[in-house]
Image 1: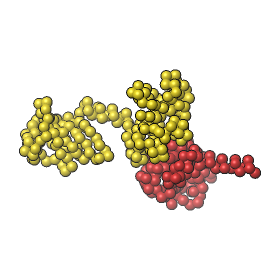
Image 2 (image 1 turned 60 degrees about the vertical axis):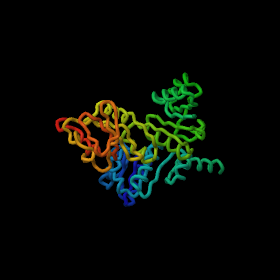
Image 3 (image 1 turned 30 degrees about the vertical axis):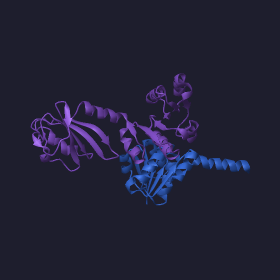
Image 4 (image 1 turned 120 degrees about the vertical axis):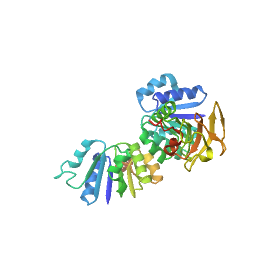
Length: 139
Length: 223
């Protein structure tokens, strides 16, 4: 199974390493070449030696998405630091490349909820934080 | 008409000003505080501060009753999403989006964000119009209908020059709809003869230009 992760920040890089360790084929796309360091940090071997793929490119460029393997991807994870970028590329993955499973991070709870209604699998860290704070206050 | 314009850059500010002068009710939305303050000096209550990709900002601006939403920020993703929620969540009937990077135009189309206006594209079209290559001018593009109308000048010695319409071997999906000669035009019949110096108007399926242009350019005019 090929997992394509766009945006290798703290979340994206951690998910990438877990997926690779679980035996999946993992490809990471990020516009910042330095984000590669996050994948290598505290690891005994480099990301590529461990079998991972890394592409430098902008998520909205179709060429970059294709180079990163979107045409063969089974799972697409949109985890850049921009909600709007994530929502656009997730829809591209879904509608243009028909990726079977598309998961998108959206910080804004209301839009996460609305896009979820439209058929996107959204993850909203802000909403999770709200719920945990609410529980903490009630406890 | 009530119009919401998102992005108070040069385009948005001038658009808002023109729309107000034409008697429309306008709300301009700007997410940069300093820019907002500058523009508010002139537009006062017609500009609101906020990030229009957040739903509550659009709601505060009264999106439910907007007749038209125009997204002209410098960020294509923002313009796509603002128009997408305006159209699909708030059922706004008319949207217009600005495309900053012409390569992103395909994403606007994929997500149904139309019309999408790209300045680069418009200027390229103008260049084509002002500096026609082989005398070919695009008069009208209807991508939704899959039709184009072009105008071409018939060069001396071109394969089509001096031939009856019926004898000009046009590719399927194209048709000569009008001939302009000496300042006036006529709709040709199959036995009308096309002469060098005529301007012909053709309707065609997009992309047929490379097959059509050789019929109307002289062998010596190919650059």
